[in-house]
Image 1 (tube, rainbow, N blue to C red):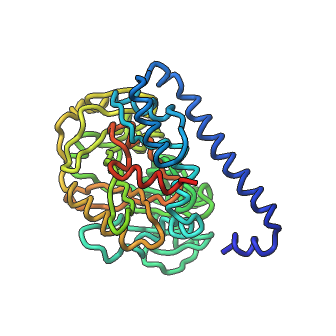
Image 2 (tube, rainbow, N blue to C red):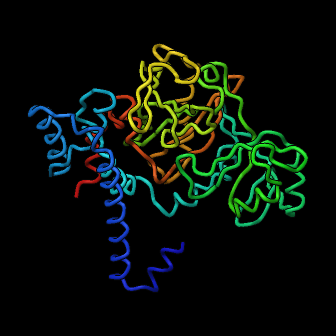
Length: 370
């Protein structure tokens, strides 16, 4: 791998300096993020007992105290104190790097490879793939190399489709809903060739999934994504609190950081009473459709959890995976993508009021103990 080749050519002190700079950059980014949100949690005051309970957990397992800004931030949304909340800054800086090898994660994270990894998994399907571009080379959905002209012909009249980057994307970045007829995207007015040019390389064009009736009733203009985080503890695959993200205001992107609404979902498929946006708008029903969240039930959630755990067992080297699923019009489980690096633990905790690692929190803290 490139980093290993570089390690043979560059002095160790230089590599350590680069690594330290990278960590400082992440650290600064996380603190800038929490600083920008200080108005959201400045009113949250922990009692002496609550502060002591948090620090007792971390001193016992981490050997030092921590900032409780993140605990207060999560609590500011859901109103629930939880001494086992995991701070985003320590997850990003330390735990994720401990759980998942960054170099291997980068290779596995290519979204165009998902059908190859999981093509024989029962009870789950992936969106049909119309076209793939890897490093500037065009492929059909069946992985046959083709010319650009043939690629244009394939999508000229496919109708509605989703196009998204396959590398280095997050939070719904550059995910576009297209509608191709006569060689032109009816939504943007761009020709297929112009769409290709705007994405340059490393992108995939796939079927637009029609969500199941229960998801469509909540909000019909986005896929509506179920985030299931799985992680390995000992010889078991566990899962974090589940969240459902929905678009709003006509937006086809449902990610909470792109303006969507997220609500916690129980393991039995029942929605919590309140949904939240990134900046703490609180809704008891979807702002567009008026569908009430409280006790609203989604199908197949227990099956979805078991499917995610089974798929994790078939994914080597990765000890934590954030899966994005939906349910199609026939209630079939659809894997949209997964995230192996740049994962987030703030919004499942913020939305649910539960610790992302639950009863396993202290074991996870011990992994980053010096």
